[in-house]
Image (cartoon, rainbow, N blue to C red):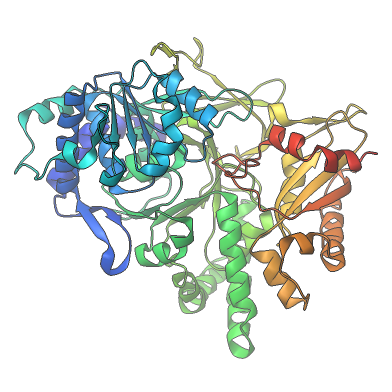
Length: 607
């Protein structure tokens, strides 16, 4: 039996509602969801979580939430988010989390397009953002507000979460909730995930129970983790990765999720939780690598020599495996011995001493970051996928990966390359369809089941795929050269001073770039170099910074073809964030916004 057959057999007949019941019965006292760290942490067991979900399901149904209705959630990562989400799932409604960085116009689009009947808001800030559009939503029946002090007085549309929940939980889940659990089917729509809309209006991606369960079980088959694995939820809940990794995968493998509500608390949360698996966008891994580099730089003498020896062995093993070569037994034994003695304590300092699978996705990650982390015994493997593929469609694993590539298709998933290099995907994890504004679900794949992804890629003789660019982002120079910008940008971002890089050149004579200083690394670098300022704006004009970036650009150009090389660049102070508008909530570049906002800087490089 193939691995794909094993995954299909393991998934067959399962639903998220049924798996939650299984966990509550098989692991009633095991931790499911922990909020916070230290003495103030609170934990819901699997039985308690299901009881909370049962109460909210009944309450939401009483508010008028029905099967196939949409429910929007504007809330940070807190236990109530999981509870209302899963309560809607049991009713057969489609929960959808919105990004907290949406503008009023973006909120208006999602709210109208979804035709949501129930809206769940966290508190005053969410109420302020959403209030201007509430009167434009004819399908809206109720607004649930989680923070009790934020509930408006004398407005019958609003209800407090506490009032909705009631004072006490019943002793056991009732028969009505058990019927809801049984009524769910594998191909029933489960949730809606809106795309970031970088190339147009956001699309409402509808995923089924089968889609997300296949994705979750597939990951566990590819890289095993212990029973009841630990994880950390820190990405936005609107992100497909967090929706799968933070909600659905822990239900599938009865895991224990620790919630990190603020990015600033990620490191102490990792140390407290010691996750068995972790997914990060490149920027997260780059920041972790930057902090580790600083710590290693402070070592000296015998300690520094021991770490260097262990790192050399670890990165040698990593490079051999990346190229598909066999690792000599003596090298592997030496690497493992040095890892236990020298490198594991370093990983423990950031909570990664028991991490079995570490993944990066959403954008290319610089190779030097991957090699640096691997040299510390923390190999990070790239994956590729979309909201439409329930997350990862291709996965790099310890026995099948290549630097700069995104792995092989997961079991039960096929990937094909079109004539123009575009990747097409089909399989069990591919979406049920796109949500239409009338509530119907529109097919996204056609009769043959292939989904066009918009990504351009290649495949090598080992069956490992690499993503070279987005179809709509290819630079076509005035001379007719087709240039993928993401490789250029990845090379430029490999310098620690650079947080973001944008390659420019469409319909122009040559390629230029905008470089954004790293808000953490640049001031630290300035102090180490004895520069008398740490202000980002001043550093962006400082001659020593410019000299260092001249070298960084020259280094990148040495790895590029002549037509791809950056001829000129401009330095921006930054930082760029989703809030400032240059990045999507998934930290991808908003190229149209950047082109418009920095038009003068761009034009100055061509005048």
